[in-house]
Length: 313
Image (cartoon, one colour):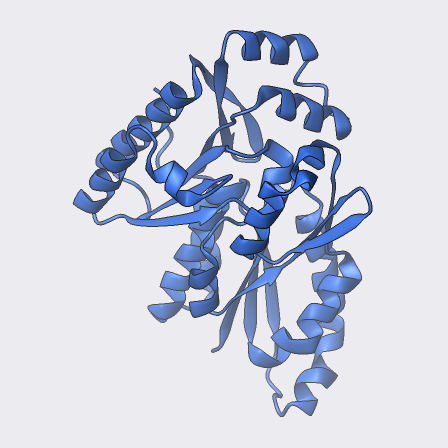
């Protein structure tokens, strides 16, 4: 059986990995002022955006996921011919419309695929399953990496689906933002009042950086530390301890809102890489997606992995 895997463009995995493993992308459009960019996980394009004056207006940007008809057309044009079963793995539905759009599109696809497949010489059924990662950014990458591994091992759709749905419940994403004012302005633009001006001003004045956690569709702070570098050090040291304690998949994903060499020079980065090497954990590093950077600002650091329930610290 030919099994396809599709992610949305907020999934922070290296573009070379996605291409070499034939992982498709559902793009997201970003509108800033009069300019519209489509996020296809092109790191050069993302960095060009970061270094342009447009990035200064990112807090007021509008992110536009593929609509139901666009997703339907994408699948009917290629995927229903190239594959027999497709897993569409999305950002958490609590933060984006992508999951719901893909779910709605799946009903139309399953009603309309037969003539398309028949014309291509395929008379067998087609199946599509939409999976909510219940997470964001680099933490989204854990599930498609596992799907690729299971597909390569010859596992069938039923086993892959059960594994991914269980893994989503045990995937954690931790992020340290660099600019609280940006987070506050972005939240305000989207109608989210959870980050007040006072909190942003106080945090900036005292150089307090939160560590934010994504888990089971919920996002919120789990620690507040003084200084960006100390916060990143604490995050990387914590991640190294989780690696040493044992992860549920041999995968750790990192993303950064900027040049990756900047992240690699941060405190405790080398120690985290060493801990992963000791445990045979594969590390995936990528520039944060354009969509992600618009939402949390440049310079943010995020780490994702699957593990048993735990507390940050």
